Length: 225
Image 1 (cartoon, rainbow, N blue to C red):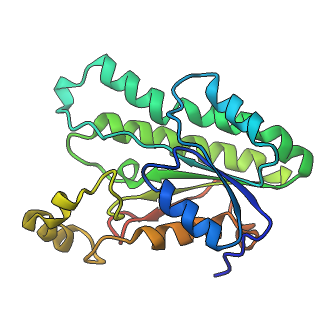
Image 2 (cartoon, rainbow, N blue to C red; image 1 turned 135 degrees about the vertical axis):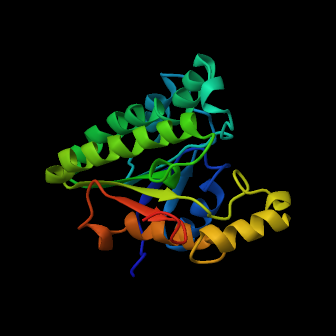
């Protein structure tokens, strides 16, 4: 699996959270020039502004995360729904439409969404978060097939049980009940490492992955497929 990103300028959103730090590290190791942005993109004008300021972008990694609500289905209120969608869903088309003109002009580009497998398999008390993550994946599938004739490859990683501090704290990982859950629910029997996930992301942003368009790749140790 080739992950050569030499000469590529890769823009990573929310680079200080979720998969951002490891993606920036691995992509840099693979030769990319990484442009890291750390802002929460709930301001409608901000996605367009940061893309415009970045200059040439060969690859866009849409890495968005918020603490996942754990609200019972019948207790979910409008403000929770709106805030989660504002953070996870609304920035996606704004980022994509901002970067598309330059990619269309070059007839090349990679856009990768770091999503969640909670959109692929039902989870209790995760209706808001799962719905937002599902909207992300549906958008990627539609956008990917539409832009493929322009040489633009739009795909997504749908992850769960990946070792990252946003969703799996050290306290959580040390909990015997969580370790038992891993053995019971995850065929791999452990968390996927951040580097394993980021290396796959690097592959999907490389020229070697030109055959993939509008696809969702579960990375979850077999929890979702």
